[in-house]
Structures are given as structure tokens and as C-alpha cells.
Amino acid sequence: MDALKALHERVSVPRLTGPAPTQAQREALFRAALRAPDHAYLRPWRFLVVEGDGLERLGELFGRAALSDCADITTETLARYQGLPLRAPMMVIAISCHQAHPKVPEIEQDLACGVAVGNMLLAAHALGLGAVWRTGELAYHPVVREGLGVADNERIIAFLYLGQPLGARKALPELTVEDYFQTWG
Image (cartoon, rainbow, N blue to C red):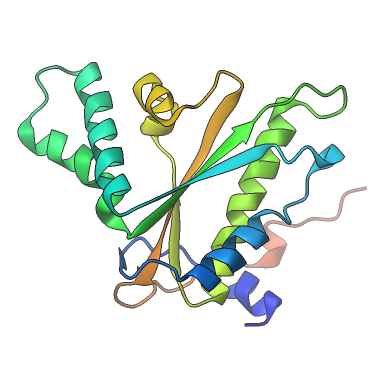
């Protein structure tokens, strides 16, 4: 797919099914992530690939986080937390790794990691895959951070769900460029 076509047509695909991306598709996705712009070439990121039994273990971790917040959580709510990772056959957890640098503050390192995730979203679309970027409270939860081995100098930027689109892609909203871009000065 043409790069501009992918940029202009990409949309989040929250309903996903198997199979997970092939090895060739993964290579393309991961290489796209590594081409994100990065001030000072710090490569301030790392990625955890979760699939198969790992998705169930991640669901258990999410359930433990929910239980730590509310010991009398309902069975239904606990099951919902445990089922979150099972919404796709594969997840990539993007983690920003903050490095001390006199010219690159942490926010720029987080943004670089975010662009790496955006590149994977675009690559997934170009490959005909479905993908959705989710974060939410679990990305910041101490139980989840500890369970995933997220260090004090790191931050979870995204839970990227990947798979095959289930059903039709949602319609793209029509946006007018002039509503968002103005000439200054």
C-alpha cells in the first residue's frame, strides 16, 4: 500500500480475531517502529510481545491489579479485567525507557516511543491487519508495572492489540484541514 494512502485511510480496529500477524508481518511492524524519529538516537523504548498463554497470564495480572484496588470486586468485573488481553491474538506493550540526556527530556522520549507505536499502527494498516492502541488505568497501575518488569525510569506508552479485522472497518470521519491548520504571523 502507498504510504500516503495508509496515512490517509488508517483507522483503529477494535474488533480483532486470529490469526496473529505472521513472522514476515511482525518483522515489517517491528522495523517500522524502529524508524521512529528519535532525538539523539537514544532509542528510548522496548517492546513486549504477548500472545498465546501470555495473553491469559497478562489477564491474570490485570485481574490482580483490579483486586488490589477493590477486594470485593464482582465476579463479572474481575472476568472483564482478565479478558481484556484476549481481545486480540497478539499484543505489543510499548515501554518508554527514560535515559538521562541534557538535550532530550523524558517527554520527548515518551513521544518518540509513541511515534514508534504510531508507525506500527500504520504498518499494520498497510499490511491489511487490524490494530488498536489502548492504554488506560492499567498502564499506570503499580501491580501491572511490577508484573511486567517496568523499571522506575520507564513508562508504559501503549497496549497495542493486533490481529485480523473482525467485521467492517468503521467509516472515516471527514475532517477539514482548515479547521486544524492556520497560518501564523
